[in-house]
Image (tube, rainbow, N blue to C red; front, side, top):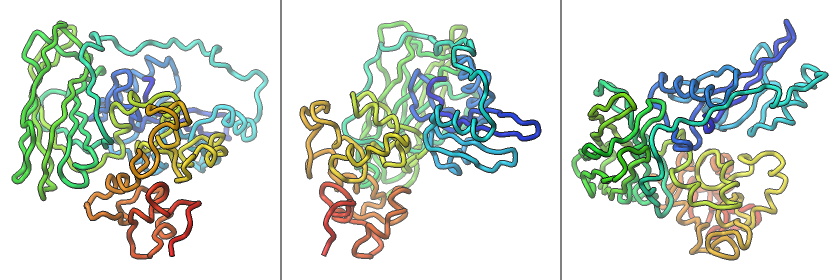
Length: 420
């Protein structure tokens, strides 16, 4: 499966001397790419591995992480990292982004060179395309405005006698996470590993919210759309306005649909609890790559934590050497503000700069400020910011405020003047 991020783990065996390669299934960095979506069970992860073997044609065995992604978190959450281990499990080499040339040099040093290095063409791998179960591109995709973050969604597996043939993706905008009132994105994706699609000759899918006391949703239910094509595999996408009030209770959602394969079609009713927590394992927000273009699109392929900006440690080593030159606004990150002139969506300069532009750190603080008090505690800060927390907290009050953050609107950048 072409979007299954893998950790290429190499074990070196000294008795006898040799090398073994493994792929590690951790999480989908780009959910929705080629139609593949996040699985709910370990059995579905194994179906993904089988699909990856089919489409890639590789005979390298796979190690499948737990559904809690315990190993992913233990080794640093990188989607394409690379490790070389000896026979006792000791890490001999590691890098955040796989580099084939560097890996070959590592193996030559640790094991020894080979007379005839294997080329990809020598492997004669029989690759296959992703499944084509029904037409796509029939239903227009929803374009979201603003920045959204994926939420933790809990499928109520025990209440369903069927697999979740269609899976929910939920994302909240910054206002909904920080202020409790904002937009909620819902995407319903047919799962190709179950070989299902929509049958548009029956009743369209429908969802219904069952909000907790004090929580309101608009609309409370929605369905559709009506599609002229007999069948398709496009997602069904919606935006709802949610006012959580003072409630932190999950939002219960039921959805009803017909799951159809080439051989059968059955009615299904299933439910989710949507939690007001960012899901660090959910990959890039849906549609973000469609909105990007050119330089920014390619750059964001390295956005390992899906926050829409790049820290130096997220980039491959060769690009790290050019980080300061690429960081045009000297805020310590690469993002939309750093788009080269003439390549950005807003004309020369890649978008507006300064307090009103996309690099506005007041907005960024608002996105991270989960309790809505207008400042960041150490617990609310991203992991990389936690490592610099004491240095950035210039007034030593235990919080980061707008003027302590790096970049436009703040004075906490590496090159900014110190605060008096």
